Amino acid sequence: GVKVGVLALQGDVAEHIAAFRGALADRPGSSVVPVRQARDLAGLDALAIPGGESTTISRLIGKNGLHEPLAEFAGGVFATCAGMVLAADRVDDARVRPLSLIPMHVARNAFGRQVDSREAFLNVAGLADPFRAIFIRAPVATEVGPGVEVLARIPEGIVAVRSGRHMAFAFHPELGGDLRLHRMFLEGLGV
Ligand code: GLN
Image (cartoon, rainbow, N blue to C red; front, top):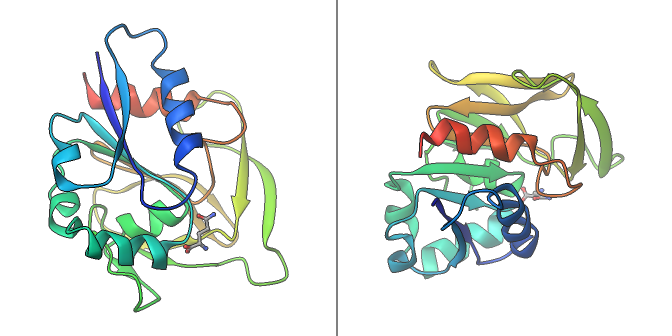
């Protein structure tokens, strides 16, 4: 089975747990558990970093002594929205201390105040049909390092990437019931 943790400090934790439970339903012996302290990371194959408020999550990561353990996490990371901000190595907001899991620069709230939320049918590399992407005060990646594969982009910037075992999305694959990106991620773990 596959063991997935969900960083459970703030944000849409329950939605990530439900989505990974769904994606793992056909893999006996798998489990999805909340992560609040460094010891919760032991034995995990993967970790989801949820959407929410990246400045808040960053502060709680520091408070819980999780910065180094997360930055050194050996499994795959599945990061969405605020999670994408945290996974980056450079962020346009000094209140966020990024985890440098993926070499990319991320701009928070990249859609401007007028357009808080939007849906778009996105072509994502590796998927046969478009993905209904839900953007909520979403970031974009403005620049990615070598070895980072861009899976989707829109006029505002890059919104889906893969970097080794890690994947990050500016939108919310954990919402909407389409688990194709979760499955793609789990296949990439090789477990
Ligand atoms: N704008 C938020 C942030 O940067 C992310 C929004 C979200 O996760 N839905 O923290």
